[in-house]
Length: 290
Image (cartoon, rainbow, N blue to C red):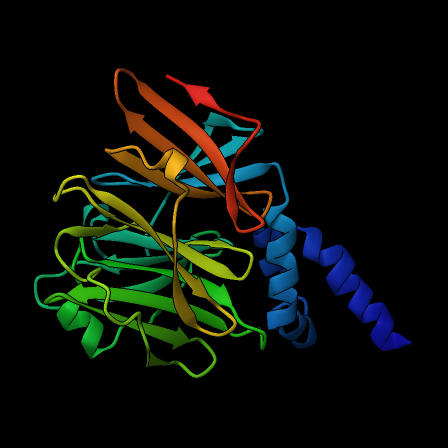
């Protein structure tokens, strides 16, 4: 019975508090520090925060890192805050590769070697996860990635590198603190310098990337999907009705569902919001035209 009461307190009450308050409660005692640090609690807490109407927008300027609140779709400039990065490095030397549940995956560009860092700007904690391979082969315009939590509540980091025409996919395990190589799609040319990769967007146990080629007419836009359960890659195609050249697609997650903003340039600039549902792309009810 005592265990049930503890579970209710941590999972139903404390999991609804802001991250800074949760960190303060870790100082109550060793038991509370342990309970509030378990992967189960972290997962419940991040899921509750993701459902809030208030979001955070982090921006890297040349000399500062700015965090703004977004409330019901509106940017609250009056509540803007300046945060500091844990390393002594200019924000202009930082590259954001991806984000997931409040965590930010970024690269520190240095003259001697690059470094890959997991950073939680809310609680000011970070972890260096790069290895020799990343330090040697990271390319600003050729690397991308994403993050996810597997069925064992282990935080994973997916890193995709394009070098010398080849695509190398690797995954980092937070639990094992190690990297391992994954099999990528055979026969594709996505490692070519003609292709540009987007950041990974997590939705429904899958991380999605757009891989676009604007150099060779008529151009093409592909979707690479990474299944986080099987840790395998596949290619999705856009329906012909939205294949307009040149066309740009930007992924985002709305209500835990994958959406895409399709930008077209013809006689006028248009933007259409589409939703991926039941293995098909459908026009969402909210659309904009500029």
